[in-house]
Length: 115
Length: 112
Image 1 (cartoon, chains in turn brown, cyan):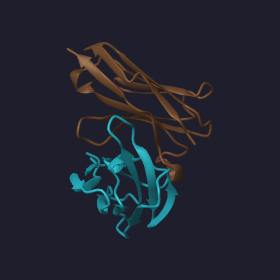
Image 2 (cartoon, helix red, strand yellow):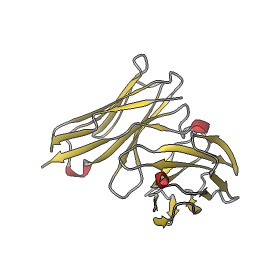
Image 3 (cartoon, helix red, strand yellow):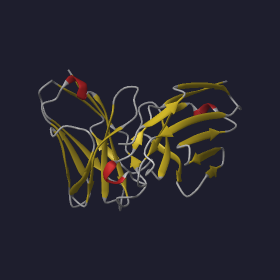
């Protein structure tokens, strides 16, 4: 089955700086890669996703890049703000909603924005 | 907010008991998936229901079972609870089997 590794487990950055979180996956058949943000006491919230036919996608301060050859993808957050503090999860699957195999998640990155 | 609602929000059960968790999917979504999230870990896929049938399952024993109703709401049942079943249980709905998954706020289950 799919295995997703996520690094770092904790990331502390100054407000206004950029943050980068990296993930690798093992299943070459995976073609959908979402990123979720989870705040304390809440469920994961989809913030951006990318499909295998695209190398990069951007939405305001958030961008995701995908390297299918190397089987890794990254989340980039620019001009970080205090409300960006949360746990971020990457995931991979063979279909958007995970299909019959579901989404396989990384272990998460706790992003801390220092004022 | 995603429109996916789960109940109850918190639950405490004794080892060996049975529990039922409930999920109402976002309007128009016919696919529901359940995930278990242990403390400090990412969510793990339990199973998925599409049009009232289980159509995929992760690495969980048969004592984890589910149902999906004609209105696409869903239940997760866990029998013979073990201490390790303590976790946040998340429900996600999507428009179709391959649709983007939107999560509810979860049910925090504590087994004592």
